[in-house]
Figure (cartoon, rainbow, N blue to C red):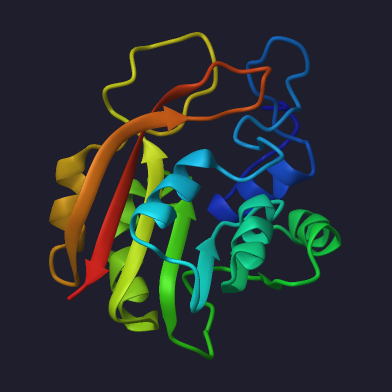
Length: 210
């Protein structure tokens, strides 16, 4: 992190990330954002194919550049993406005109619809102390039987000299989601990163609204 950048809260951190004010450990350029792979996550396609999910209203948390959103819209979903960074939301809008993008804070945003599917690739694992709140909010904006797909870091990842996603374990997800969701699926996966970083262990979880 730049020494002259003072971060007071999570929202300021993510805004600084997309202004390239935060530096990461990489092979070449430390301003390259590790989790931006410039395409959709193959893990996402695999799980949507498995559950035959192709239509309905879908929300992506922390959508970033909107690469997954674009793929999901092309797949047939009515997609909304939300991110707190105005810089990355502008990039997302330029990348896809078929998606509704919201510049806002997930924890305070008022959504005007109920969703059939919620997607998270790398949002939830950054808020370990707010997992109950995340699952409660999601339960309030997802339809009965709706699917919540989470791609996260993995606590089984060995230490490496690179930027890794925050670790999560299955027990954390089960414990914090139990009041609102049942877990249908959990699998260790590769958490894909930019070529300047090492790919890491991840998890994919599929939860269903009770």
